[in-house]
Image 1: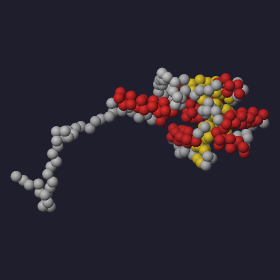
Image 2: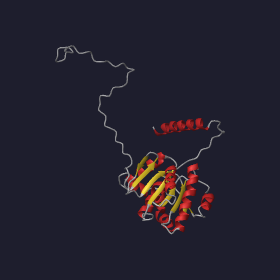
Image 3: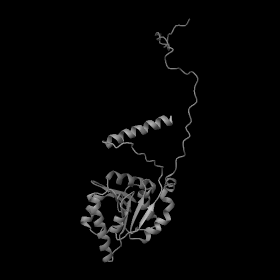
Image 4: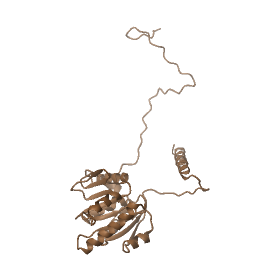
Length: 266
């Protein structure tokens, strides 16, 4: 009988014995599981799969001839990232900068980063952003994402917003003091530039949902364009009873959704 002695002359500990209740030990080597997921799409393919792409030519045709327009598009349609690019690609507003306002700095930064990736350019070159305490733009920047507050700051020094050829007021339904004041500033700049014979300012108001008639009337009966389609189907469920604490109810619902997905997926 061979003793458990290693080559250093020391006695090895006895082999561990597994009890019947211990986890099973597989001696046969199992083949690795092959996960064949969907093929990853390129950025260009992702752009073409957005719902807004189907209406690209019609949108460009309308934006080319209109000074002011209201665009209503469902969340996920691609309006925020694609319309600035459509304008640039169609040479609409290339004589100046295309500004896209956002109510929050996080949105301005993330959107600028995404669009710069789609344009295959370094951030701060063709595409940049300006938020409080941070200006990631250059002389080359033609598509600029910025917060409402930053555009208001620029308007203090330049009420006509001369460097901009197009101003896109995104998420217009999120009514804040900044957005309401900005609407008046942009409308005034558009009117004064027209009266002085300067380069016209194109105004585009975008939102997922808002009081269309009110905004259209304010911007001189601006036409309204509707975009349909989402990237993913959305189902709406209603609570059977009214909730006293909506935050708590929302958190409970999120956990329930995750538990349901775990049970049905695995």
